[in-house]
Image (cartoon, rainbow, N blue to C red; front, side, top):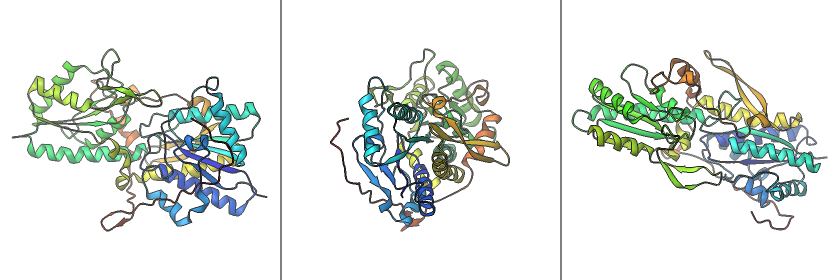
Length: 423
């Protein structure tokens, strides 16, 4: 007798280590299947996230070799495809949830693993609710993933540590460049990083500054309203003291009225405004008011795709949560999210825990006040103690012909059994 099959999907913006989570989950399921076939069957992955479940486009991961699955640990992006597609309320979109259960029934799926951020945990919670209402036995487990590091009830989120390492490195290196040219050329460098409502990535840039006067000199957090006048005073003082000024700014920087400094007209599937360009707005303000020549940079996808500079801590946690999700599911822990629990700062020690999806869904964890300096323009020692362990350790991927050697899976779909469904 073979156990129930599992469905795994990646959701939202991918990271440098989300495939390590997939690797951990699939390898754990394979080991368990070999030891006890009656406990778990195959792992099916949704092509392009939850859309794969709705359209019955399920990838049979059992057709991938052990070697290729192992290489996922070193590969960025989302190996099975991700999506920004939010399932709405059970009341208004009940047909979609019923379709999920129909697909699960058709393919004997008894375990649902959703690997994503805030909205994804909400989806996993709702799927657990509809499954219970319809009397279908499926265990739903959320696996955290978000570079924004804004999920509650977990010490950190896989994907964040590697982004933090990338942006801190980029800021340190750019600082050396600007310092070299400041006397006769560029005096201001602005780097815009991801972070809609939470300034964790901006804070991570601050790790590059280990001494007075070292870049980045100023940090602009979404948790603090942007005050142009106070900011310009800081910039001018910095240039006078050090000869140049380096700045990290969150894409979600807002004014005193809560209006985003750089908000586009378009919105994504989750209803979030398209952001981007606040770095240029801030840099242009400096030039217009102070006359300093500037350069600005937008790492954009580069910061979350930089597997070549991944944090070893982040990689280990991403893999561990994937494997732990299987253990939670087999233990019957329904409607929970696997979490990271910090045991100590120095030495850094952690373990895997769990939290109810009902307490995680649609809750954002912002930077605590004690992590932001009193003047609002940098991080505190407490913040540094929290962040430092998350970027430590190097885990470079294998290289071939001078470039990272990543894997692309075959991603062969199973045969469909149901009628087509329009999303």
